[in-house]
Length: 205
Image (tube, rainbow, N blue to C red; front, side):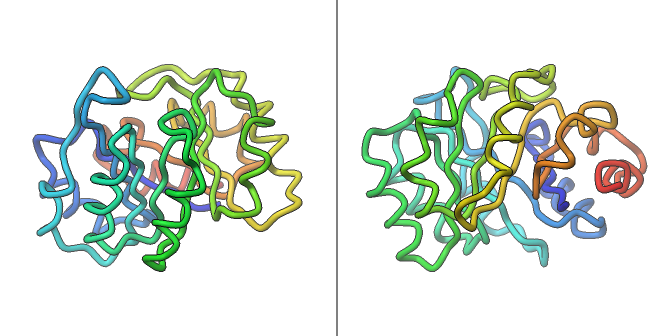
């Protein structure tokens, strides 16, 4: 299992967050992009991080309905993965193609209330499913246990995609899902620590 560290709560200290994670054992830096169209809150923008350098792979999570703009902006970062939300558009295949045409892996995220069966027809086209275990928009929320059932279902793979989970992941909640996921996204649990590598290792055990 790999770890992707979310810097959502570090929007006022982005350069410092990048520097800390550059020296860490994280596999990815997880960038939550919110413009207020899909969530109540806004985060930093792609332009805020475009000049920040890292050797870590970037994992971009777009929480927006303005997908043409946000995806095209995200492509400039040359990330490993760009994930958008099933609930943000009715034109899922268009945005899968847009991302793949840029030689970037594509992820599809589902909110806590969205059932797995709703995305089944897209699983053969995507590289990752991101199960939200909190409601999108704010860091530091409590883990929603109904997500456990979702990652269990998705782990029984017919197609070659990764299973990721995002929200409320810590030393306790990782035990609910670690046998069913490929990537754990965690923010506050890791970055609020003075020893981020120790926290990352706890999740990976």
